[in-house]
Amino acid sequence: MTVVLQNQLASQLRTYLRALEQLEQEKQEISSAIKETMDEAKREGLDVKAIRKIVKLRKQGRDNFEEEESTLFNYMSALGMR
Figure 1 (cartoon, rainbow, N blue to C red):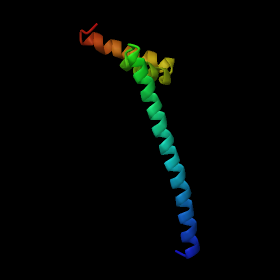
Figure 2: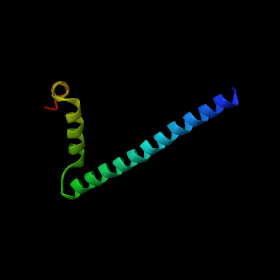
Figure 3: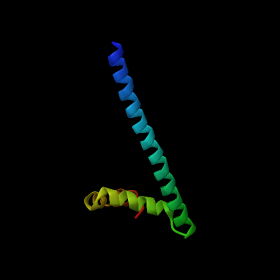
Figure 4: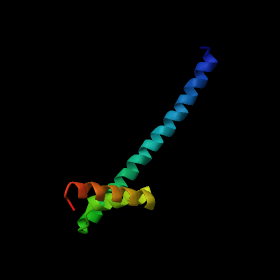
């Protein structure tokens, strides 16, 4: 590898590494904000596990939620849990 190519590669790598490090920092900040919000909800007496489940279900969309709910109901019924 020539010196020029090696320098270009090093420059590219540094650029990507800086971007990734910045994104990792932002991810950490977002994770901290999510934790703080969940802690606040818990202090207010809300069920954090239920909130997490609702967030997950809202991400899935209505159709996927209804399908998952139906499957869960059927399985629980088969096990005598309903």
